[in-house]
Image (cartoon, rainbow, N blue to C red; front, side):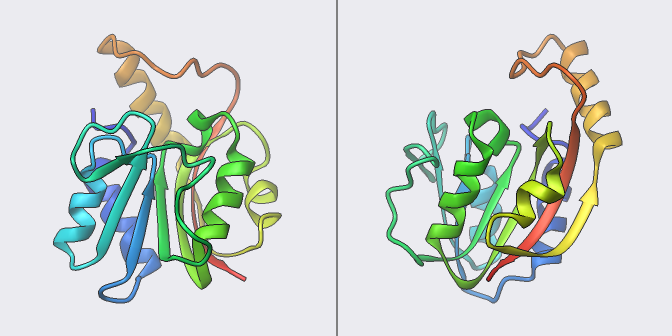
Length: 168
């Protein structure tokens, strides 16, 4: 298992949907082992990652609830399966918005326990693409449980959704 449903193919699909310009500066919020940062760099993007527990030299130690970057410093932000784990998805969205340049792109896929569309649309982003991936999330989650992998204490009804958004 690699940290989010769909693995590398899912990451490539999100990047394809967002279509960031060549050479864009992209931040991976919740970068973990840096796999997505590596993918982005191999595609010619100027990518950096941040995580509380970095597991790669491509990833800086830090909280994405209090990003160490100036306002308007990235062309795009990507985050997969991380905003929920932060414990404050609204603050994570706010920080993503803060570090994105006007017109910047947010590529987000995550677990939502509340109305996802309301959460994202109320955060200074215009939604360009939205997709419910709950069925794929269930398969991923059950496989993780079956393999005895620890999980983030998920309880209750949730959805797993993709958003590609533009900062207004």
